[in-house]
Image 1 (cartoon, rainbow, N blue to C red):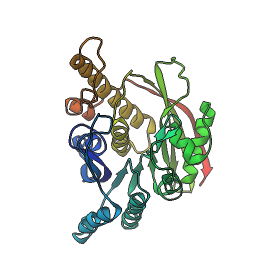
Image 2: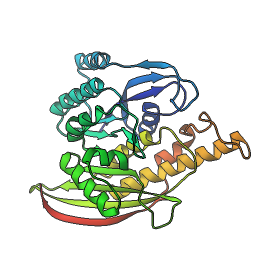
Image 3: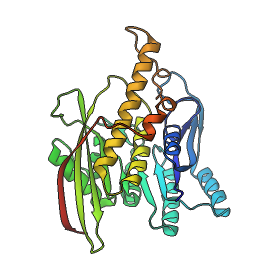
Length: 314
């Protein structure tokens, strides 16, 4: 069966971020991707200079109206990432609700991009829109620790805290939650990053089972842009292939990320030369060169199952 994704994210002419990070790998894995570019920039904003245009809520609605008039607004997945405007985000919500009405089995994958390391990099008035309108619609949510804390109003200092926060996020709507990065200390030391995931699987009798997992991801000493967008897209793909096995889906997603990042840092270091810091252009993800890894990622990061519980009432 053909699987079609509507991806509403940013676009750059040069490099890999937003839709540029998500579309190619999804297509390689057999998904049809319809892209709406929430912004069109020359390059990501980590460069010294950038130019471009921002799509308004009205312009988004015009594009969707065209798709609707031609009766080609049927989707299996919706994927959204960075947005910095409340009216745009609310227009996205209206579109998702309309498509979900036509296809109740639609899966909405949401990366609630708001900030990191204790600081918001979008306007604060986006938080209530995410909390009250976006997250309740989401089926799969991929916040970092800071974003999960913002959405739940609860701090994460321990693994138990992280588990409670994921349960609170489940209560808000999504059945699958992955904390893509946390400040928790890895058992393997400070060269590793801890990510956690939780999946509720609903049974026909109204009860549900849940699986919680933890991953220790090797750190790389460089700043990459577009990795969060790639993560959300690949989690979409691998949960599609492993719908009731978050452990395998996360292992494939994180392992692919590791391969892409390793290939990128190796290339960037060679280009920069000995002892020199790579530039943003040299650190653009080596996406096309990673095609074989995208199709069949060898597992280099294994997830540990924290708990499996069953017979929870809905």
